[in-house]
Image 1 (spheres, rainbow, N blue to C red):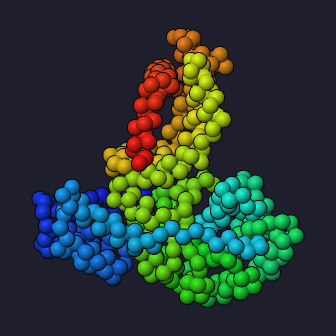
Image 2 (image 1 turned 90 degrees about the vertical axis):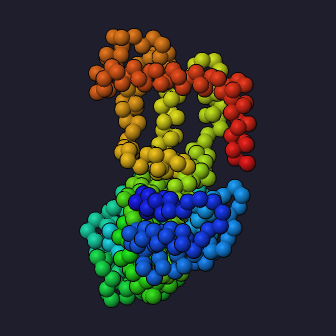
Image 3 (image 1 turned 90 degrees about the horizontal axis):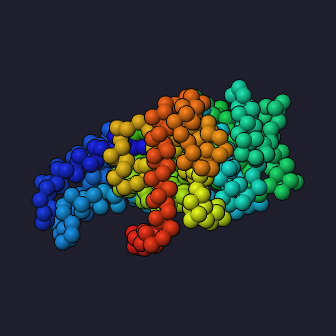
Length: 443
């Protein structure tokens, strides 16, 4: 996510050297590189120019604080402007209405149907809403079937009229069904086209007028850059939508859409899609995204994801096992499952300050735990409970059963032993000291 932009901004800040007052000369050199980085990220030229102008006005004449050098001050100024450029503050969904109606719009291939499912899953699990998904894409082959598959996957009802080719009628009938069946959120997935056309705009405008949604969201593929911004403007002129959804931010996106769209349509980015799984959805926080673009990580989001997966009862059970030296591979497997639910590994590492930059050239497979899981599943129940009984012949059998090597089995056993010792140490005074350190870091 934004790797190329992050690298170029990092290089731009290296232009500033020395201490004391920032001069017009070193600011101009730095901002020239910043503007070039933004343009390479497919940010509109006028937006990039205005951005660097605002940073320059704030930078000239400012005294550097005693603890800062010019480069650090410039990073702060750029971070503040990036935050403002992307909206300044977090804007949530308007969930008023009985039921709340959310209309999804966008071009074909932007990820509307998948994100409709992600949003339904988010509202069901995190907001305790009774959600109804509605299939109003009557043109794309298998569109309704795709929505039904998604609905079944997340346990959300899908309303569809496969023989009806009138999306306005389907939408109004769906609202009646929602009211009759106690649904308090209705998400309507509409048809997309390969390009903006009059027929498409008239159709979604008619749906909008018929159902009067609380939220009309424009879904955009973040990898399409400036084209996405132009499409957003065309939709906004017709629908006057409430917010933007950016999908595929886990891909090799240049970032132009995320950085430009608020300036062009003056509508907030509300959510981002960060992967293929139904849980891969995040509320968009402009300040946190600015931190990530500048390589500062996003510890707050990382902690929030960890807290979502935290099970207090399970934690107590694990704690007791560690105290009695009974922590086994089955327990370890459960910990892996919790980590996997937090999101893809590259995204999680990018949230750790400095780690994203250090790991930028490392290919981190989202199935990084697959080999470990295969090894554990190839163990007997007794071996998982008491790893110390695993001898040479058992290792050969486990390696053969998991499609790995004996060396890989040895490596896992060694790492497991080291981790068990560390966890045991944390149970005592070491754990108390670590907690105190963590609390200090949190403050």
